[in-house]
Length: 256
Ligand code: ADE
Image (cartoon, rainbow, N blue to C red; front, side, top):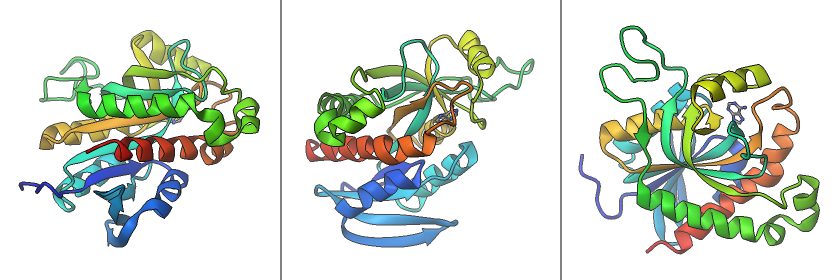
């Protein structure tokens, strides 16, 4: 299937709060139901887009990515959501733009090396450099303007004054990491991993198989430890959804 120049950019949200923050800006909106998902088609800042909620976990994300590419002819995918910080210095309120993704729960050893996707010969999947660069620049502008975006009370309430941007490895698996023991094990096995979530590497594998560019943008909602569930929903509602919408809008406004 050859996508036309007006083929849409796909923006995939892990959480409905993020999708809800983007939908009001969608022009000429119409929606299509497929496989239990509602795909919102239209234009954002003059770009044809398709917005959708992925569902949680690798299968939901892979299904969504496949549909976006095959049924909706998406020319590129951007996945947004939250993640747990793994590496020291990756804190709540920080933003991580993936440069590479890996499935931390892929283990067909001893038949294949741990983390390698069997028969693909690879464990790491690269995000598109141009997309990741553009999203990182947009994320930095939003972090710099966080008080204007969220209000001083929210910035101070969530202690976001020192929030930073990171770029590097994000790992994904079908597990919400919610203890210091689990996150310590992951960190020991994969010391380069900045953050852990449940979808990005599945989207990365599908996009690699179809030869489609993709990027993954995550706001750190927790430290993947014993307090990972605390204030999770409030953080997504108040901070992550506002950041995501602002970053995506900023990025699209500046994209030719
Ligand atoms: N998404 C946000 N926080 C997470 C965590 N701690 N584990 C997995 N996915 C997450």
